[in-house]
Every structure is written in C-alpha cells, then in structure tokens.
Image 1 (cartoon, helix red, strand yellow):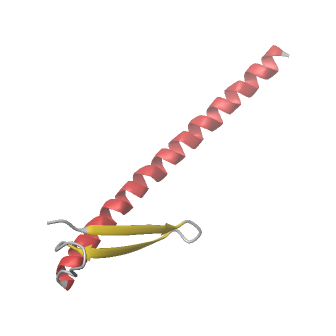
Image 2 (tube, rainbow, N blue to C red):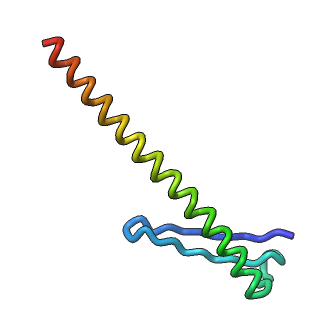
Length: 79
C-alpha cells in the first residue's frame, strides 16, 4: 500500500495546493472519502509544520536583531 501526494506552495499568496493519487498506488484513484482523509491529514501536518517554522523564523529574527544591536554597541564602544 502506497500513496503519493504532491504539495505545492505559492509564496506570493501563501496558498497550498494538494493533489492525492490515492492509497491504491499510481494510476488508481482510491475512494473519494479515502482521498479526503489522507488529504486533510497531510494538510493539517503541513499547516502545523509551517506554524512551527514561522515561530522559529520570528525567534531567529529577534536574536539577529539583538546580535546586531550588541555588535553596534561594541563598534561605538571601540571608537
């Protein structure tokens, strides 16, 4: 049993497109309900991961800003 999913992101709109080939394998569609469940789980997992990454980006941006401020203080102190 294998299934394939293709997930594409459009950065400008922050939208996601999900296409499911189905659990039956390539060339087999699977049942509509099965495709929906697999698609929703994958979409939920992807959404959760994107949220984690957004949090990490915010934390790193804050640390970068703090490091740049400290560096600037050192430049001023050294003058």
